[in-house]
Image: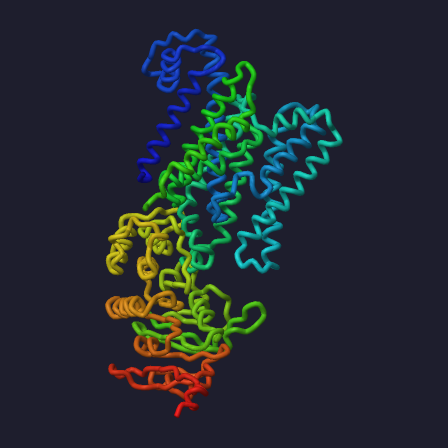
Length: 343
Length: 266
């Protein structure tokens, strides 16, 4: 599939996912009236009549839609961050939670829930955001310092190993904190498994600036990641500065992942699987993988969240469970069902 | 076309000196081959010329100090091809050749029409257009080397730095690739600096040979003056005959140690 075809298909997938998510839910909204209301909201000058009553309208615009938009943002950010890390580390198995990002967020959220529980629910996202960025910063600094004294000629492997070490350490600290405060285990685990049930327009506007900046930086560095694929030395011979490119892409990926984690908890699977699907659709060049990951990731998470809130309605499944439960078999199908691109 | 000169170049890797005060020069459009035994410092010297390892001394490109040039500017002048280039297996030939345009693109720019034209021209020149959409993993050794050269050429360099460009090829493909490089040199006026392990081949293609040993220049000049049996025998610890080939170039022929059994024969 050409890059352009793949991008159109991915955009169509996202639109369908958003519409499905808007139509489906606990409140039974008439799909036609919902569609009319959505179009009316997007283009009020058309003066489209809608039969949606004010209560249903409130459900649609104040409860369902912010959740759909937040889901799309989170999915896009996780997939982009995963793709960014994979480009930097030249390894398709790297996830958006690598380099201490997930472990840092987990520790941050745990500390906030255990020690700042009285300060209100607003503290947890901030703590997760800060924890995630701090985790990456420590891993990156450790890796950079270590690669100066190591036999691994390339900084990449050192950085990944440092990430694993820092991640394990932070998780150990988190477990220690949690062991001493058993009453909070339920709250911490429900956060860890991920959820968009607290979605609001306020959350959307809070992460939007970070989402916009990190996505823009990542999308603009696709070409640089493609050059990095020939290795540091040849990339330098082509006039690129591999260290600088790596630092920029890691920072942008960390910011993207931290923004997503802050409002959704830990959602696995998206950052590793979506870029892989993108690669299968349009080849390994990051100029294609990054925008495709953004679109497919957004659509995928919107659909996953729709399942999370409807399957056991009125109860909710943790979205991290859904992404793995639905995503893993789908991924196996993708793995065996697609031929290699360009052969 | 660009003059390239190294003056008293020293490279130290992991605290051990690898290149020790090497001076050599090649005129624009010339072909300089670095020869010498394994570990003589040939590849390191070529990497220093490409600006990939820190070095002492001076390397000049058209009398400009290479150290004063920005990475991009140097990349536009010199195309470097390592002995074993990294070929991302799933990238298509076309995408790979496009990477050669990197030194010409602004930081946030995407390749435009001119870049696509230059890529097509490079692919046509190296006769790889018929597998432009093929993945690199699906290329044979000879095709691969042509794709790599196409990438180098796509950047419109004025000099090619080739580290053992034919080490993975059989003799036929070796000749094809070197003939091609020689054509590029003549047609586009490219300056070529290469390491070559085959002494006879080096003498056939290069107009200047620099023989390195232990990081120092042992001899340099025209092939006829460098490729002499006493010099090669002492530097390589080998036994060779140097004869003159039908084309007038010296041919370095290894000589086997006299076998004891042969003497026993009546």
